[in-house]
Length: 310
Image 1 (cartoon, rainbow, N blue to C red):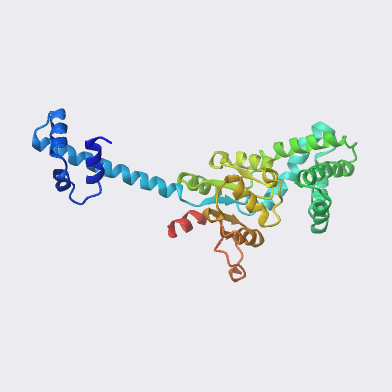
Image 2 (spheres, rainbow, N blue to C red):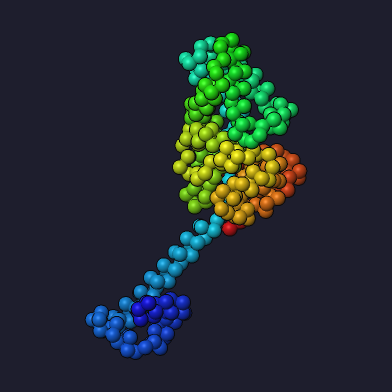
């Protein structure tokens, strides 16, 4: 550190910087003044300005630390970002749009088949049985994708492709459909951009795969506002308990106390809370007393909520 830098470091933290400046080595002061070719008055003004600039830079660094220390936000998709009901109706139409040119059948038949098979797959008992039968997440996901397309082909009345082809077609269909779905809740897109602009790191924490999340966020025009799109496929764990969040936090290398999880499921938030993450429930339900989580009616309320708690 040069003599002048030492002076600035000291004076920037004093209420009377010039008095401390005069207490510094007269030899160093003389050398600096001579090298700058300034008279005494101009030299003192120069040093005062430099000390003030040094102090301002310190303030900027402190503000940067504040942004860095902000909570890392994990957003659920369906029920928080997007309306599941509106999205489901669009899926029924887009399934036909994708598969009719490839496999035949009518758009109406594909739409009806998708509704029937999806209800069958997501029925709680069937879902639990599939989970128990799978050795790991990859095998579970593979079985679901293949069963989805096979079931629809049977109902449409067309020949079912081989298993590997079923898997390939199912994943391509998901990529095609999700990029054409527009079901974001009102104001959510602007809210995401606001949070991103304010410096909050954003990631998803959804039960959907990262492939589907990629499509939905691209359709919303906010993919660039997010970091990792966490679904079960990225961490090899279904959204069925605390381990889901534990693996997400470990993957990012953060402590749970650095996280804010926003979800429309009180169960999911309970799992995150067990790890000591902050949580917020998004729900329009009037029965707020049933949840111990802070509750918002819409994600659009989140920026103001965070501002009040700074």
